Image (cartoon, rainbow, N blue to C red; front, side, top):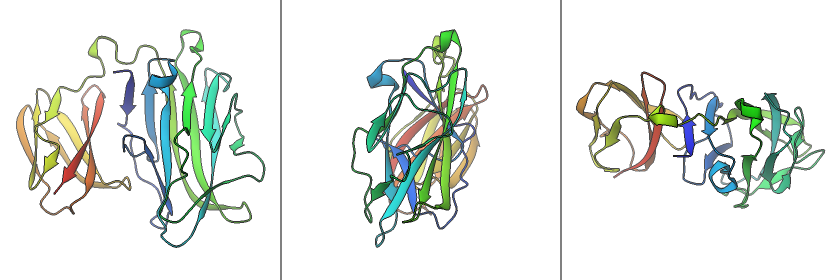
Length: 240
């Protein structure tokens, strides 16, 4: 696997009034404090493609992305596409730059399937960490306080010799009552709704385990499993 979601530090700190959420093209939430790691520079495999969704059904929203900080490199050979593509990018700069914003219509996303983050610099053999912040502004460009930050990590050693493999699997991704997980090790399981909120959490031992989802609404959820070494896997399930 060339893309690894490192979500052991995944937290939800978005205000209840937030009007947007962010997800990857496969439906994985990009939530505040999360890290997405890559061990390749290949554009197809190392691109974190995303959608920003407007949760309001009545009002359009205006969005920007800030390049907050960088470790072991400066943003050269990093491409950020949000409406338009910017390459290179600079720490402390927001995109689109200046007074420009990305406008998202009610109940929709930014509608640009090419929007992504992509690093193609090897860091001279050192891991590269870039922090980004999605934030909402009003019609005058003034930040509203609604934001989330995440880290894009490039590390060529990620996934080597199975160090990031979780030895656990779901028996089914379509669930009516109980989610069943077969594990060969102790794992912590967190279940998120598509707004990034934790709706269930359990620590499982080796063997076949069941987590009751009877009280949850019928919709899509993300199941994050993390073992004691910090390896993480994420799968999508459908609760009927």
